[in-house]
Length: 304
Image: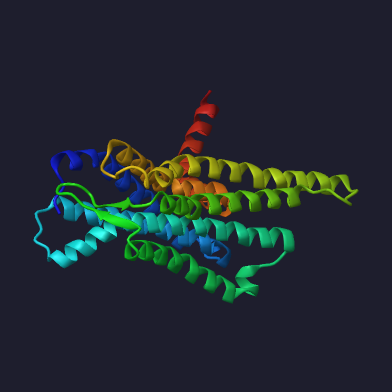
């Protein structure tokens, strides 16, 4: 299970990024625990998404620790661990893509049809959670059992998935990327179009408010998805066609972990409630300093 020196050295940058990501996520969850306003059902999908980030970080540190040490493992357990290493990141990224889609769909229903699905459709929320977490696992298991994908393992390298058929790769590409991203963008477009609609509205004040609401929806959403897609897409698009141990595999995986590190910041951009919480925390940190500086500045001014 031990990595070769070259493989371990190539993952040093990823290790540093994961440490930074752990610190950022820890501060984020501490802020959530300290602010009751953030403990709302409407943030359920965001918290699920961030919990998947934590699971990916735990996965990396677990494998990093085991791969760096001379451990004597049972052959069966070693094989199970190798399957987990090869498929778990693909599974978690699929889950995260559909968690964001579920978030957008819930916002669409709330904005366009004025329905709070978190209260009115609790059963649908529960069923959606089950499907989002179970179906990707079934997809991975079926592909291995049917022989459409094989386990790639070499001494000194990370375990990876090897695809037998190009049709399976195309299917996965549609499943994990094209379908959720396209549907997401379509729902977001409909939300912004509805929020900016002035049909039948004669009041100039209402028109101005709707246009302001449109900007409030548009700018954070464009910023979030632009950064998220730029960091997340390379790995998701490339992992089926390249080996994770290659230089390109290492770099795309690194970008994926950078995306995990900045996810709390991106979430704050997407949801203004998080942004206001961070601003409050920052003001509390700066508060005592300003209280000290203000009297000194006033005293200097009086002396002058």
